[in-house]
Image (cartoon, rainbow, N blue to C red; front, side):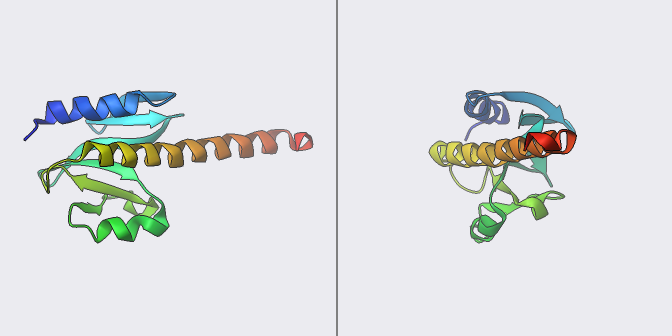
Length: 126
């Protein structure tokens, strides 16, 4: 089994390859962001290490039916799920797809927010 440091290094590689991504720490957890918005976190919750990602709210139930996942505390209502690191052998192809999907959701949200702000500031530009 991989150590937390090894898991972080693999997750970091996936996240940092994405355009505009940055790494920071939130509440002591390694956090990956795009446009200042979080798309993945490596965190420990109730003594269990997990990789948190955002999924479409409509698809969240599919993930929650899988015992490897749980609804991310506090932000789960916004479509976040956590993959339990120790629940099964990690499939890094799957993790990469989850991270990329989360990135796309979050990056698209940031773009829409910026466009809405621009329209509010200059409504004649529409």
